[in-house]
Image (tube, rainbow, N blue to C red):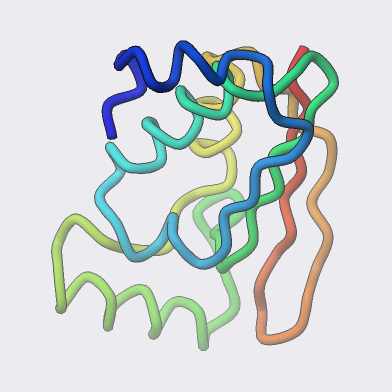
Length: 116
């Protein structure tokens, strides 16, 4: 739903944790912007947003992830492996501080944000 709706306003500062697994690369960029906007509204101060999936760092990724990116974009031009820096910038606009990224199996990252 739209994060400006009254439903989200009722949930303001309600959650300690929000979880997003394997969504950012298989959705339009606007979905990531919406995720950050909503997380910024519903997380309590100090609450965490945990994102998991493939990312590019500095526009680069392992060859297998670059092939996956081409495959995703062939299915939908709005999809694709995102630059971590762009995801961090979208989060920061909504009051979410980048905490860390952790390398995971299958060339994925766990990315943690904290609400200021």
